[in-house]
Image 1 (cartoon, rainbow, N blue to C red):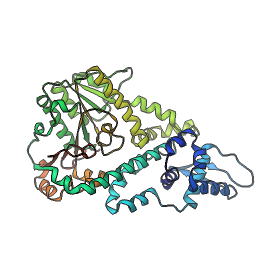
Image 2 (image 1 turned 30 degrees about the vertical axis):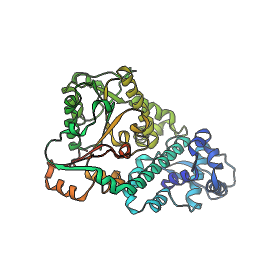
Image 3 (image 1 turned 90 degrees about the vertical axis):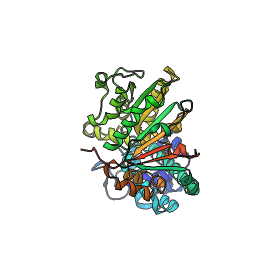
Image 4 (image 1 turned 120 degrees about the vertical axis):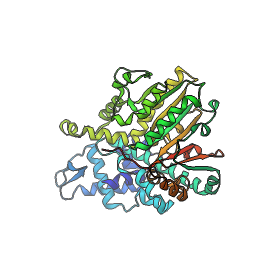
Length: 425
């Protein structure tokens, strides 16, 4: 079933998102030779021995076949086509195609970009699953295009890239743009890293002195919108945080840094909207009892999928736009996961919000190598990594552009690498 998620998207290449959105089953049956063969194979399979299609951990949807004709539901039709694709169509998977195009070094990126949590399970409507596949194709093509540009321009990029290895506190003022040149600062992080959170806290504590003329607001993924809040509310002290908290206490060091320095904070994540979307988009053929047992897992699957990422970013975008409408002269600092706020991802906020912006990424060497294969040799220079390791737990690498590059929208403007120190339980 895992292979189907990739293969069906290949069959829907081209304008597949619109076709699937309109009539998912018909679109699958009519698009391209691959799915036509699959549909025919599925029809032939109706005369075979009875069997069940396994979805997830258990066999949920029996596809009864044999002498007695059975009218399959849309869900069962989709699963039949999936089965036929897996058994009769010898097309290379999307992963195989990409490995052929970009070579062995791309495997780490593929493992992340096409990883399990970016793919929607069959707990959702077939048309939503298909739209998610279309988004994965779009994101992956974005990576391929970026990889091609970085490879072609690597000598010039290396010549323009500043690198500093240090154990001292980073003075960010010399790395930041002039006040007139920025309206949104994007601060991306790799999650569950104590050293990453500490560096972000240090950065936030310096913002008042860097931009004394600006009304600074920190908007973050790590606070959730409470019931009844229709417009972004400014949180100005720790006592007001309680209804907004949704994570472990160690997640809030940068929030406390902002409040302690007179910077109000705003919630971006709307879990109520996410849960409502999950309920509306779930597959109606799943029984209420079964759905009750799997709801929590489905919410997580939705939030980390390509479809869910786009859905959540649209909510964040509206809240940031509302903040800027309230005070157009404000400097909004958007702190969240790197897939949301760093431009290497096709649907990241810098790519969908027209504003003067500047991107920072706080990460670790391990995460950098795993997330972004095209950064290899830029932000992961062997000499710098060796020097950082020699400095022990206080070592860090700072990268910035000495000359602005057209690729900074995708590669970011400042990147800070710190030692790995997980906060996962």
